[in-house]
Length: 386
Image 1 (cartoon, rainbow, N blue to C red):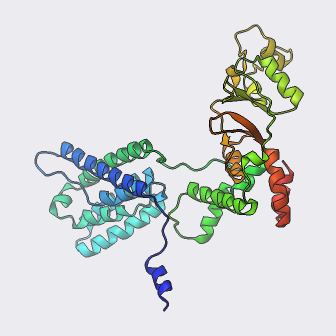
Image 2 (image 1 turned 90 degrees about the horizontal axis):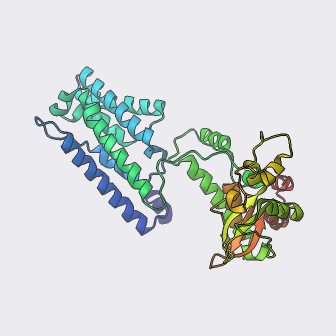
Image 3 (image 1 turned 45 degrees about the vertical axis):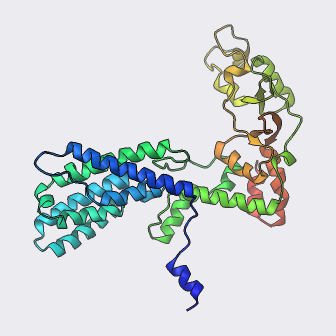
């Protein structure tokens, strides 16, 4: 057997994690377990010592080291531990043989977690501990489920919610990604939710990765492929430099005339230093129009009505604005347009001043030739509908 093949089996490649992330995960887990132990001591009754089950340590590893995993989400933590604890108590009370009881507790706990969609590996130890934890644990009966496991899980979950959302770059719990942006870019950039579900069902096994991560991996892989295909093409190379803009004090009627005369969908709003402070698009006018005001021109109601209504671009502009630096690779536009559902991206320099603007049409023109060259007919069709 070749040594490299043996090494690949014994030491499979794992995702690269920075040293900073490793230290943060370890410190967060330490704080969380300390909180669980302290809380159990405060809640403990005088007649017995506080109980902290060892499986909470395993749960802490999941919640802080792989917090994006489906195994680490709140329902997996709470449902997995409580269901397993209840099954462990039932097996301990109704199966005399401890070996059979422990094995049955683990087997039924796994089945219950699969069935309830709350698979959480450390909960298997919670079920077994209800059987082999000794007389003090068995004497608690259902108190083991609520007074011990329930209390441990509650404190650990609160710690995970607090720490994972306070630490930069983290979000917990993970959320199912919304529907792809209803644009050709949105459809090209990532598969639909139903496509991912169908792929996972086709594998017929549990994949320890969240759907949001799969979605993100697909998008980043697409961007990386386009970077290789395009070479050194940056936003400054494809942006429109002669950009029409308005100031925050520009009247709505004047801003509307800019959109109408230039036949554009949106215009950037700049401060005195030419920094982008907002965007005014046609949709902003529509969102601020009182459609039931009277039978006159609905847009005219917004622009000329004497009522207390928005009067300047600053009153209706979208802010803050999604912008890109002029040195950003053009392939990053895929994620920007698809992720935010926008039609135009202002481009700025190092000082944040506007230097240009990129629209979806610019991106379509850029990718049109490479797509045709590679014969991707389906992608051509999507782009041609823009």
